[in-house]
Image (cartoon, rainbow, N blue to C red):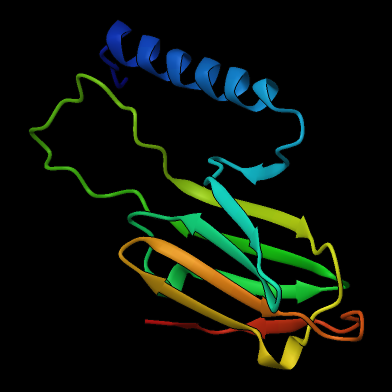
Length: 145
């Protein structure tokens, strides 16, 4: 028989984090996010392009997926759990990790073949040049450094 030590602080912190996520997502019903955490995104429009900037600290470029699907930009990825030394005990957990996926309707037509993504210092920037046609095919955009 294995005995498990009960850690009320850990249970309380897990509950606090889940409650925070629920309140955060209900605070702005326009934010649609699938997954464990929801990175913040700024959307800009210039005369020539739509620009999306997402804060993704701690996410490796290899863990980010950027796609255009039917005039929607899909940002997805995963921030892995960092291994902790066996002797460590958390006193507080505020940083979230795990899978995320966000999708955004593109307000106009884009030149999908000229789309670019770059990832520098934890910020993903996707530039979608304006074009004449709707995106009717799936396009995977590779993140550059």
